[in-house]
Length: 176
Image (tube, rainbow, N blue to C red; front, side, top):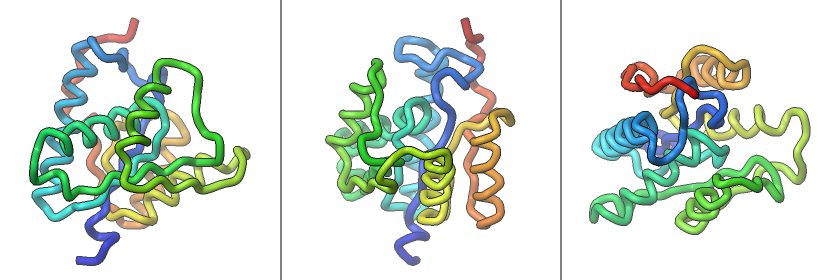
């Protein structure tokens, strides 16, 4: 098994793109965290030892935090690498997700920054990078949003395994 074949990546929606409220304290968020946790543990059981976190607020950072917490709580998870992949120099935001972002950065074994500045192409190039460096995409995709559709299609074209947590259909909490 090569390094890339032991690498999975997290990529998904921003908070406002979910059909439910993606916020700690909401039932849907708790359920999503649980399914992310189970999916990570299953990947580790199948030999995955490195996870690339796209670092976009929403699904990416939620998955990054779940992995960081698993590494703290479970002895066998301590060998698993968390890699933060930033789209560009200075990437960040000024909202509650910034705390989660900083926590994932602090827990990361490696931080990779891809572009010197944000351009129109930056985020698509970022998503292609994490797909190119992985064999498994762990995502949450409801079938809408062009940028995520592009990423799913790119992963298919590259013959990556796609684990879409939407297929669990576990989210019953409406947005609002």
